[in-house]
Length: 250
Ligand code: ADP
Ligand code: MG
Image (cartoon, rainbow, N blue to C red; front, top):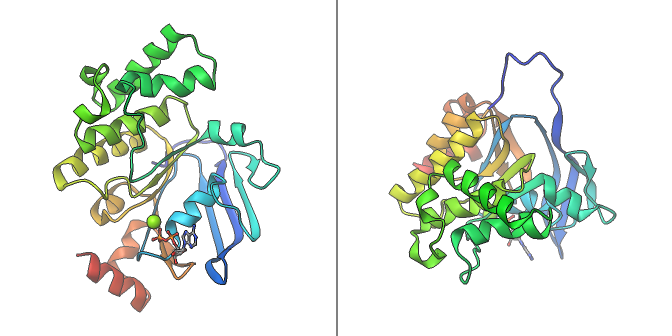
């Protein structure tokens, strides 16, 4: 969440300029402009197929772009990008948790710090337990993913991502597979992160959540940014498309 009392110049963490992306003849991003400053929480909303996931994936070079430019944490994201450096700075969490089933919760979290950051095992374990505290799961450290609920597994996935100390977190509909109660516990973790000052971009259908924690809402429609503004924009949609979208989400 933006710290409005901070005296320093805002630092741009993510910048997309004129981004275009095609899958074959299907142009799914048609000139996207997004600027996210440090500490900002951006929620991307929009109908299925509007290009939300593709936009997010392009930021972490999981998709290439056809035109425009993307800069994330000072890295120009293109075929010359140092992917390891980029992905040290960017955490990304999806709807599916993708935990390793044969590793315990703490081992899942220790894996990347050990392999990528060469952290000794003992330090990696301490780090894993700190991260588990952040997501309220210290008691699950030695369990296996299948022994956990979906909401708990998703919180482990978030802890695993946080263990790499990213500068920005990307969330793509991380609660879509969860029932309302489990959704709530995952959203609380994300809300705490936001209040702690983490820069984040999240694709979400949780309209009330977006309203409460986002600094900026981006409504995507047919591969373009159709409307953008503070959460109050949802009270007064300027386009029929946003109006209809909000009605359908109710
Ligand atoms: P959203 O996340 O808003 O639902 P997506 O970014 O997933 O939208 O998809 C936008 C469009 O791009 C859709 O028409 C989808 O079918 C298409 N698309 C996404 N990924 C691929 C892919 N790997 N290959 C071909 N088409 C894709
Ligand atoms: Mg999507």
